[in-house]
Length: 49
Image (cartoon, rainbow, N blue to C red; front, side, top):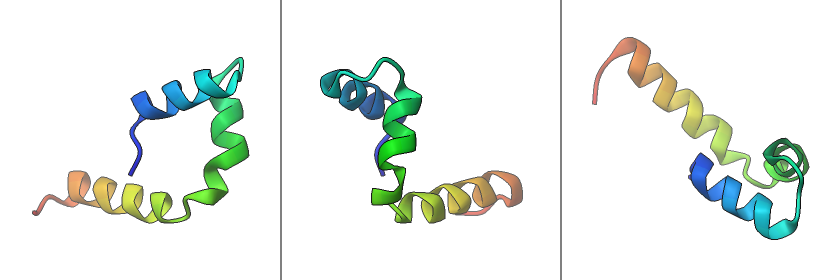
């Protein structure tokens, strides 16, 4: 999964004024990102490996 630092760099290279523009425009391209984020959050809340 791409981290926030990488999204910032991508946003700058695309010439977007704000990272939100990049995320709003391209977030649908990475549907697995939502599942990965949910899994990470569940691990943080519930604990485990």
